[in-house]
Image (cartoon, rainbow, N blue to C red; front, side, top):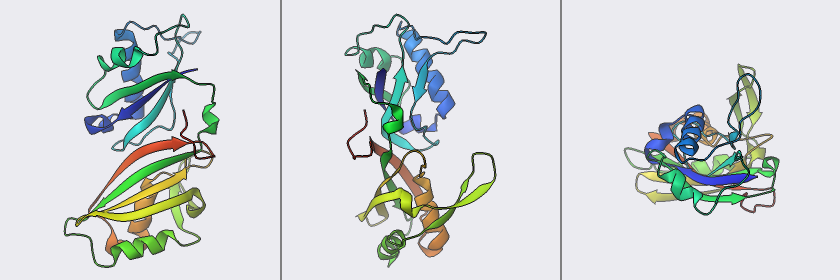
Amino acid sequence: MDRLLFEKTGDGVFLSHLDLMRVFQRAFKRAGILIWHSQGFSPRAYVSIALPLSVGVESVCEILEFEIEDGSVDLNGLPTRLNATLPAGVRVLRAYQSDVKMKHLSRLQAEITLEYDGGIPDGAQAAVAQLFAQPSILMKKRAKRGGEVEVDIRPMLFSLELRAVSPQELQLTAVVAAQNPSLNPQLLTGAIETYLPQYAPSFARIRRTEVFDETMHPFR
C-alpha cells in the first residue's frame, strides 16, 4: 500500500479531519495524480488518514494511505508535487510503500506543554509527577454512542517524562495507547485540571511527535 508521512503544524492545526481529507484529495487532483475511486452511485477517492487529530493539535508524524488509479506513481517525486498544491501548515515529508497493516499502529508519543501565565507554581512539577505515578487515574471520556463513561487512563499511559522548559512552561512527553483502546493526550491535561486544579495551566499545547508499533519501533 502507498503511504505518505506528513506534518500538520502552524495554521494547519485548524483544519478538521474532514477538511484535511478534502485538502489531500484536491492536492492529488491538482498534481495530476488520479486516485482510485470506489465503485457505485457515489464514488469516493481512496484516501485514509490514520488516527485523526483533534483540531488545534500539531503533529509531525501523520500517516495517509492512498491508492493510485493506474497503480503506478513516482513516490520519490510525489512529496514535491503535492507540497506545491498543499496549504500552509500541511507538508508531505515522505512517500513510500508499506505492507504493515494499520492495526499494528498501537502507540503514539506526544509532547504536552503546560503554559502558566504567572510562572510555574511552586510544587507543580512534583505534584504532576506524583499524579501520573498513581496506579489508577479515573477520568470521564466521551463514549462512541454519546454520553460519557468513566475509564482508568493509567493502564493506557506507558511512559511519561516531565521537565520545566522555561520559567512559564512544564512539558510532558508521554507514550500512550493509540488504538483499541486509545488515550487522547488531551485527557492528561484534563487529569491535572480535575485532580490538581491549583496547578491547572493557563493554556496547553499538544504536539504528536511519533507513532509506534507494539515493540516501540516507529510505525511506517
